[in-house]
Image 1 (cartoon, rainbow, N blue to C red):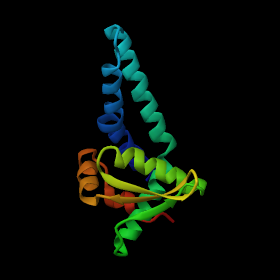
Image 2 (image 1 turned 90 degrees about the horizontal axis):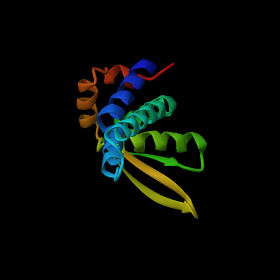
Image 3 (image 1 turned 30 degrees about the vertical axis):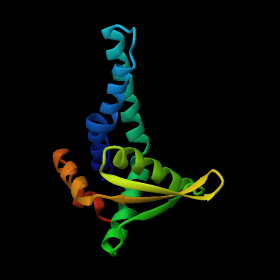
Image 4 (image 1 turned 180 degrees about the horizontal axis):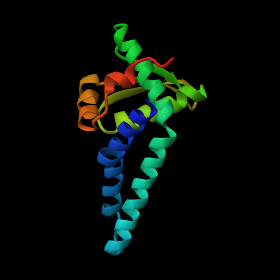
Amino acid sequence: MADEVQRLLHYIAEHYTGLEEAKDVERSAAAETAEEIIAGQRRVMRKERALADRLARPFQRGLHRAYAAYRAGGNAISLDDRDPEENQIAEALIHFLVGPGLAHSMTRETEPMHYTYIITINWARLAALAHEANVDLDALLKPTT
């Protein structure tokens, strides 16, 4: 199942998060040559794919947690940044789902400089994107043993 998660994250990186960052490279390239801009865009895409690989497991754990809440009638999960695992899950979901508009998040300060992230996934939009990426979202969401 890790392959499905990585395939989904790489698709999001290549078509959404990395693409936006690559556009930022181009917009901020005042006096750079075309070759320098292209090299910068390639670096951004490599960085996004590496981030996708690093956050694949927390992303999968977050999806499982959010899907379990959804199946139980909830529409959001809360993640506390003081817990390292929950903080990584929040980072993964916010970067790869909130940025591209596949989820929404809100924050609530729990103590100075610490937050709870409340994340709601738009399951219909995520399913459509997974279909575009040829990823079996149903299989990806099945609980791991």
